[in-house]
Length: 323
Image (cartoon, rainbow, N blue to C red; front, top):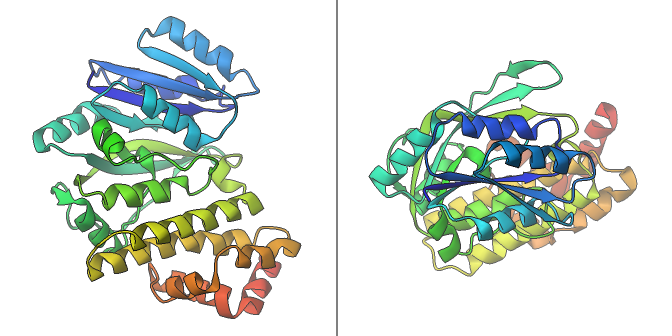
C-alpha cells in the first residue's frame, strides 16, 4: 500500500466526515484511512461507523481516552502504507496534494516532505492572514540536520506532524513515536528526533492542509497540565540532544529549537491561576532555563523568556492587566 492517513478522533462528530472526504476527493489510488477513536463521549463513534459503511478503505480502531499521542501511535502500528500522513479530524486537506507530495517522495527517495497551511477561523467564518518567513531552500533535498539548521537560521520552525508525509519505515527504524500521556507540544520532541535521525527532507511551498482554528481546541485551552507537558518535552529534548554526538553548530540549532518549545511555558504561565504560577516556573530546572534563555529562537522569545526567568514582576504586571 502506498499511503496511510492517520486521524485521531475525539469528540469531533461535526468535523470528521469533512476530514475524511477531503482525503477521498484526492483520487489517490491505494491508500487507507485509519480513524483512531480515542474514547469519544459524543456521537463521533456513530459518525465514523457511518463513514466506514460508505468508504471501504476506512478502518476504525477504538481505545480508551489516552490522548492524541497514544492515538497516533496506535495508528502508526496499524498502518500498512509506505508513507504516513497525519491529519487532525477538524482540519482538511487541500485538493490534489497527496498525489503531488507522494510523487516528490518517490522521485527523491524522501523520508519527510512538508508543505504550508492555511488558517480558517471558525468564529470569524473566514481565513486568517498567515505569512511565515521565507525559507530559501524550497524544493531542495536536505539532510535532517540541515533542515534543522536552516529552520532555526531563517525562523521557519513549523514542527506540527500534519504538514506532509513521513516514510513509515523511517518512523519505525528511528522509533519516532509520540510521547504517551502528553497532549500539548507532543509533536515538538518527535519532530526534533526526526530531524536528528538523519533522513532526507524537503520543504515545498504548496498548501497541504487548512488548519481550522477553534476556540474549544486543545491548543487554545491552556492550563497547568499543559505547563507540565511543555516542561516534560523541554527536558526530554535536552536529554536527547545531550545523548547524541552532534557538531557544535547543530547542537546550538537544537538548543534554539528547544528554547522555542520552552517559550510556550511563558504564555501558559500568564493564563493559569495566579496561585500556580510559581509552580509553573519550578517545572524546569533553573540551569536548563538559563541555558535556553541565552540560546533563543528569536529576539522576542529572548525578551519574554528573560523576564520569565529573572524579572517575573514585569511579566505578572503585563498578564494581570491583560487577563
